[in-house]
Image (cartoon, rainbow, N blue to C red; front, side):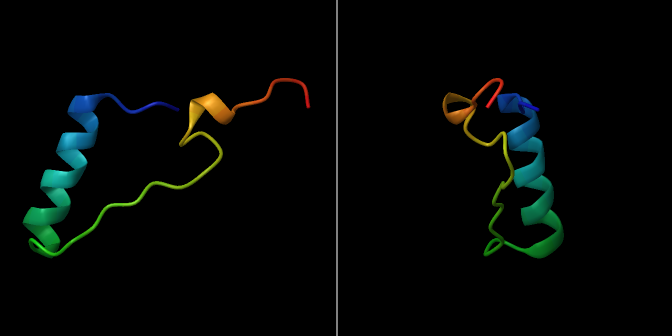
Length: 41
């Protein structure tokens, strides 16, 4: 799953609005870096 720039901005803005300016958003999972994706391995 890839997030668009608009989706990333919305997530960050929501996190800051709800959790405060010190909130950090971190993504994790197998698809955070599409360049490291391997097919059929």
